[in-house]
Length: 91
View 1: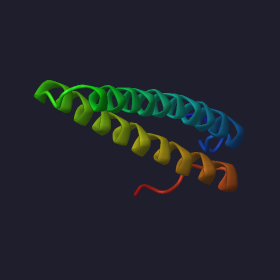
View 2: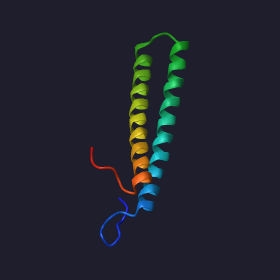
View 3: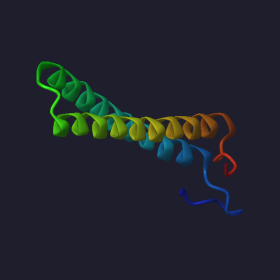
View 4: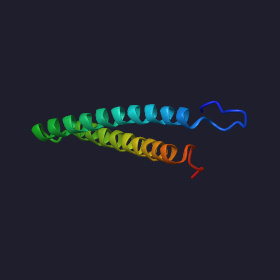
């Protein structure tokens, strides 16, 4: 993580910037995954219910959910860092 000062505690501003960038990247990945899922779902609606198409839609949904979990975690940590100036305790 961010380098600490004399006592080894990370600089709050550096932590905030680090988690802000993680939040932005996680949001981009979530948006891409959600867009991919919507596109595949639309394509599936317009075609027959082929097994491979159904599997692709399910994989896209799982990818979207994983990206959403990552985004939510980054959002929670960023909020905590912004409010408290340190990373949250381990869950």
